[in-house]
Length: 106
Length: 120
Image (tube, rainbow over the protein chains, first blue to last red):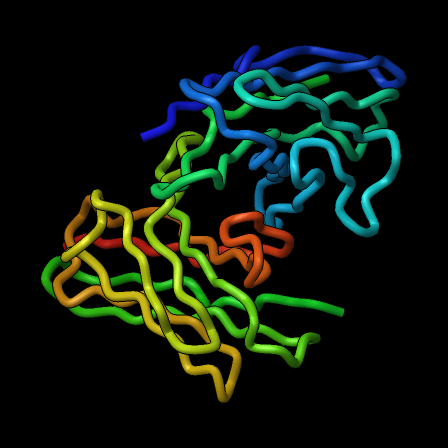
């Protein structure tokens, strides 16, 4: 199975901050990676597909980059609604696997 | 608007059976995959398996093969996750997620989650 290591597990930030989350795969996965946001009591929301493409309707403050084994999600300027947990997930091969999550806190 | 609407929370006893659902709306094609994902208390997410709405082709995670049954009814754009005999360790939040037929696992929309509690 492909292991995804996300860092940091949590971070504290302020409104307006730029935040970067990293995801490292245990083997090359091309650009077969998505990022999504999870808030308690809400449906997860997909943000990025194919490592760097913005899902429809997602604001441009979110961006993704990377290829192969190293990937990043950047939020250019945090807003109150962005405080949540963020996950990466690979779909290069079954079983699909997830990173451990990064909780972004105030 | 694309939506995946999951069935409501369930409280069951060990040994009971259960089938939860994930109904898609806002899209007419059956050219989509629906995956099931488990979130145990805490944060870890586990992929359980995936079913193709068009022909019910199914792939299971080795961790869940034989433990659950995943199925679909394309006529109503609905996927199902089923247990024959629940255990306390099945208590978790279960999410469904859609991905396009040409990019299995690249989830674009998710359900709101179904909380399953198994307790005697």
